[in-house]
Length: 132
Image 1 (spheres, helix red, strand yellow):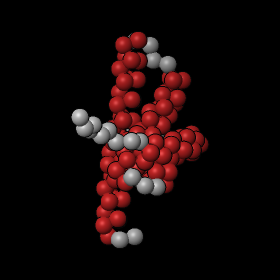
Image 2 (cartoon, one colour):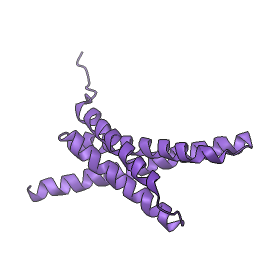
Image 3 (tube, helix red, strand yellow):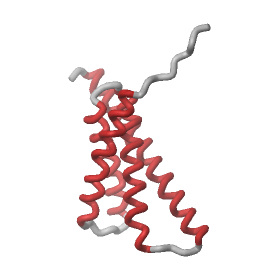
Image 4 (tube, helix red, strand yellow):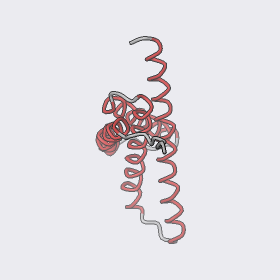
């Protein structure tokens, strides 16, 4: 891999991780706002909501990353999803969360969704200006 390709891959992965993390944070904020508005917080809903937010983050990260690279969508989407998982894992560990088996289940859900986002990102057609 040439230096130019490494820089492009690093840039696209960085953009995917940033976009994915922002998307995951946005989904979590929406669910938090909804739970505050309902004034009833179901603790059983935390796990599925956080998993859904992480899956949205993985999909978005894979989509953005592979749309920039325009090749190897499944690979870059999966790598981006793994990096997004790592970011959220570090944040939750810093907040004092104890690791358990749900972490592996979340990773198992995030990797295919990142790959799917990567495939869609590579195959998405760009909008072109039509000549009149």
